[in-house]
Amino acid sequence: MLNVYNILETIRMIQDECLDIRTITMGISLLDCIDTDIDRACEKVYEKIVKKAGSLVAVGQQIEKEYGIPIVNKRISVTPIAMLAAACPGGDVVKFAKALQRAADTCGVNFIGGYSALVHKGFSAGDEALIRSIPEALAVTDNICSSVNIGSTKSGINMDAVALMGQIVKETAERTADRDCIGAAKLVVFCNAVEDNPFMAGAFHGVGEPDCEIHVGVSGPGVVRAALSKYPDASINELADIIKKTAFKITRMGQLVGARASKLLDVPFGIVDLSLAPTPAIGDSVAHILEEMGLEMCGTHGTTACLAMLNDAVKKGGVMASSTVGGLSGAFIPVSEDAGMIDAATAGVLTIEKLEAMTAVCSVGLDMIVVPGDISAETISAIIADEAAIGMVNTKTTAVRLIPAIGKKEGETLEFGGLLGSGPVMPVKESSAAKFIHRGGRIPAPMHSLKN
Amino acid sequence: MRAVVTVIGKDNVGILHKVSGICAEMGANVIEVTQSVLQDMFAMIMLVDITGMNKDFAEMVDRMNALGSELGLSIHTMHEDIFNSMHSV
Image (spheres, helix red, strand yellow):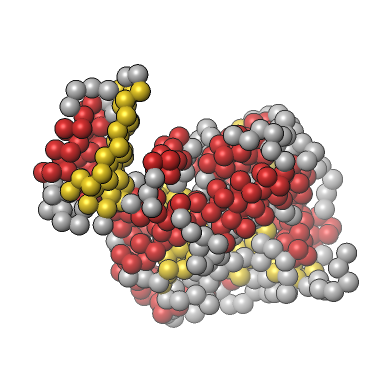
């Protein structure tokens, strides 16, 4: 039953509190595009994507109009390209990236994710060639995202891949140094990557997924913060209840949009990703929610506890609102994409060490962090290894998306613009971990009893 | 199928007339109207049946948006499903 209060609440959420659908992402399997001739494979990739997703943007715009809710991004995720590259050894893998870019241009989508390889236990044919091509692929394309899974709870951490990714991240930043190192912002290194993630840069379409499906990623940090601000004296468990109720409403909207998109596109509905995804816009910050809970600034002592509560309450509220929840689901903490995080990092209150602790209790990981340009590849690898260890031991997804600011040092900033925002260069430890990284091999999978 | 039209802004002559005029022209039947004027602020919520519309719902959204910009009002035209799904279990 409609009532005036509910109608006005929804409109206020959208108009004043930055509530939006962050993305509708179409997952497309490219397994039927595998071909020994790389040019023929690229053509099949282009044709399949355009056939499946040709009307994705138009349908997204139609739903925006129907419900009056902004859908910020329309995206596509595809089968990890390393699997296609495996069939055509010796070919120039970057051709796939160019074919994806052509498909992105034709469909008008914001991003295509899936220039990816899964190497958590080792490299198979195609994996290493794809990984080594990432710097060039991300330099010659604009809308392609890349991810590499280097570890999992069940198989441990592939330290050879960790060592390689340190070099690749640095090289990717160097290849796009003239564009604020933007390449590295489109590359993420995962432990326990999920197969149905609608968010970039880490989206790819897992092999266990159907041929084509629609995922939805919701957002709404501003709505949660506004809801909490009405209860300045509430206890923590009361705050948790308010967050649950708000997350329920936000997720219901995601469920509605996903179901509608699935019907209009005649494609099965995959999942709703219950994430609180911030943007650099004022009033759309996860850091500001934590500050609303009572922290003077995000990153100070108490931040991890507040974030743990927020993350859990979002999931509890969201799970009931959707028929199928998946993806990364939780609160994101990308530094450059969150106005409150940018302020806290600039003030020196939020450090990489604190962010690492925060990633143990929330969604994903060290995200959109700008580091000094003279950082060594080994130090990047060591940061990746630390973060992957948190994911591996805690049976959760963790990720690293670092942007080495080539030619810049602490005190300077990188400006990406748009949703990627801007980030201050954050200091890293000077002591080397090179010997550890150069050992190579694999960190064995952790045991799941005797937990302490 | 029903839609909700909300109008908020400075009171003026003929707001209700103009909004309901667009509904009538496009074959959307007005079912219910709640309206209040507090000091000089006008707030109206209108429930309309869009089943028998002779034009696309998207076109009605565009027309209402254009009217909103012309009169300096905030007009939202949304399918009722968004409110139903968000506020009921």
